[in-house]
Image 1: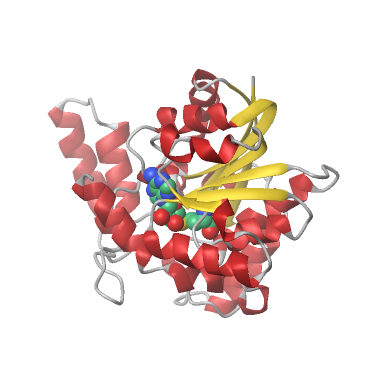
Image 2 (image 1 turned 120 degrees about the vertical axis):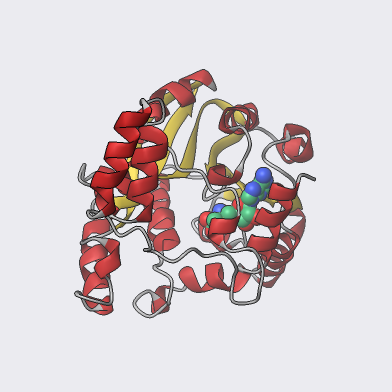
Length: 299
Ligand SMILES: C[S@@+](CC[C@H](N)C(=O)[O-])C[C@H]1O[C@@H](n2cnc3c(N)ncnc32)[C@H](O)[C@@H]1O
């Protein structure tokens, strides 16, 4: 397996407990890492209300809490992940909750044949894919693979890191986005002048690079973790055979992230963010949110 893929697996192998904590609704105000995954899941669960007996596939299911929540609403569930520790934890969670651990398998979303067996009992009505596409080589291949697993008219919910959020953070990410993407093809006089202009205007040393996890595994900034422009989504999903429906914004920032816990108290920041999470269709999310979910229908 390529080195970058190995580092993604090593990274996530170290984060099983972080995800379990993020889904513990009793800890939302206290977990050290903002519980964005909780809001992403709640937005999805709401879409299932009024749609009984769905057959739901989770591509990159992690430690299984999202799928368990889906199963608890009476739906049939199957999932896969390519990280050993995540698969083991999800299987344990299923067994503990009276679900068949065989419904979780080890597979990669980049290779359809590795998870095709999950369609043996029938194609899926819905597929979710949360936190996975930043790490893959070809987003298009992955979406096409999910499309193969869905019935016609079935839906996908796929999350991405929001590239436009960079224009709100005024930090290292802003600098890199403007210089490497917006001005990627600009003549050197433009890039040199822009670099000089930005030097005094953005905090280039913030946030600190996350090179390794607490336990010495590759950190988020040491692995492939692409951002995506939400404006590119209709085209990408249509290319993969979907009709683009809508975007759910999540992981709201009520103020510039570098001020959290500094000028604005951490709990005040979180409370204001939670208030904004109540409306995932607030178009300010295009800039205030570091992530979004695309909902699309298989044609
Ligand atoms: C951000 S975590 C999210 C886990 C889960 N989807 C959730 O919402 O809690 C991303 C997961 O994607 C998995 N993953 C990354 N690349 C993958 C791939 N190519 N195939 C399958 N799983 C993958 C990782 O192992 C990790 O468990």
